[in-house]
Length: 134
Image 1 (spheres, rainbow, N blue to C red):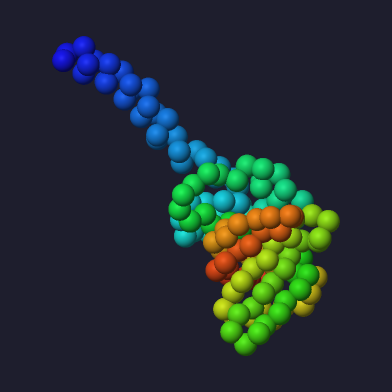
Image 2: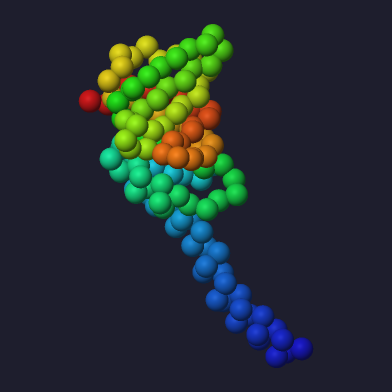
């Protein structure tokens, strides 16, 4: 029994630091954060493809932020759909409940729940949009 407890303690010593390092999956200088929070450093259209290659594995909500030029905005009376970043880069689609009164081409920051990505597009739903700081 004592031998078993010693082995168990040795395994726990090895595993506990690994379990504690899970937060390191979310770099503090990146556009992703665990849960509902605003990342300190949004991605840009240029940096987004590289960040997508580093998307943390997490079973819960991942929040993401990106700053780029507003390419399109549509309001259907219930939801607003905003698109940033050119089609030749990774585009981000933001689904929000309030239209953003900003001219196309102006820099905006989109932040919200990462809802998936495919074929060069990222979906943030729900999402908040604000004009980017100059």
